[in-house]
Image (cartoon, rainbow, N blue to C red; front, side):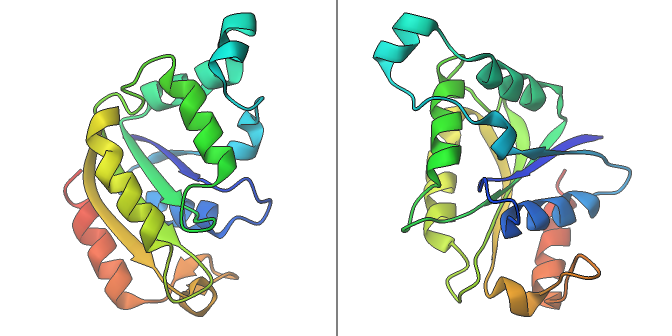
Length: 173
């Protein structure tokens, strides 16, 4: 199974990218491709810019990466209670190719943050809008207090409740 994973932060040390990779690696026999959305930075979306220059090739590359996957693992970073600007811009450009950005692929949605909220606000927003963008959401899960629940040396989640719920979601793939 080809699994594409990414975190929605363009931070070099993205905890959401670490969580997405961890979750994807829990899928048996997965061939995991880890995307870094920092590699997909584009001009800020506007219809005027689209009319002038067209859709950037990086948006097409991102759409193709989704197309090539059998399943998607996304971990959402939360900035001020919502999507990161880097992800929102990438998503806006990609949706101009096809509103069905996720192409009816099975998607596992995650989120984490350093604090107790675990980025649950953005995760709820992503779940709520998923049907409009053809995401077959198999489950959504938040990991609060990332640095207390993730062993960075071993790159593993240490919260057994989270791991159990993650495995239940993975079993639906």
